[in-house]
Image (cartoon, rainbow, N blue to C red; front, side, top):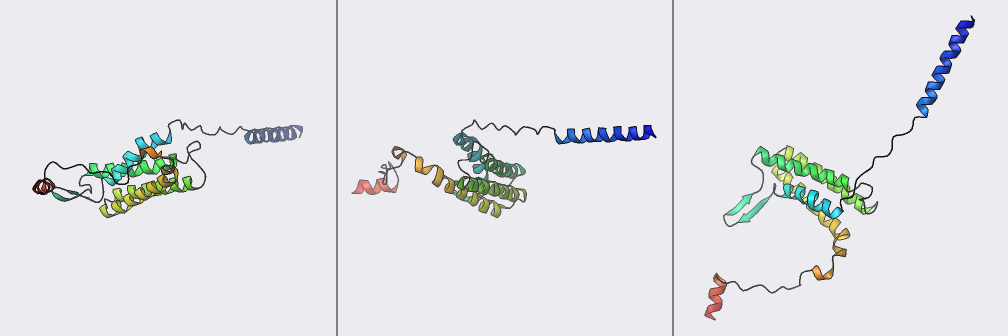
Length: 183
């Protein structure tokens, strides 16, 4: 009888110690983010190339030969557009990291919108939908310009701005030159 009680007490003791040990395990440390790359370099090396991959995969462009579609016609082209969307989505997440976020209000809204637009562009590329690529590209553009209006343009030094009415150079040839030489 004593051995059964002793065995039961020992078992309960082991369970209690094991339970206490499980409760007192130290929590893993918070992840350390390396945000030493300045935001302007994140924009130049990640966001801009990804956005251009989307924009170069949608819509049309007017050339000397007429209107040309930018919609991809190869699997490689669609993959580049898809990668651009994925990179934009992840860049939005990256811009929300502690140490990158400028504030917890508008900056976070812009970053979330960038992620949503990137995921939409990625989905459009996966579906090989040129019309959706165009609309998602427009959303990416709008998010960028809205964010720049708040966080970039107010801080651009005045000496970097364009003159209001720059003087256009004289064209050496063409119809303007002919008209000018007759007068």
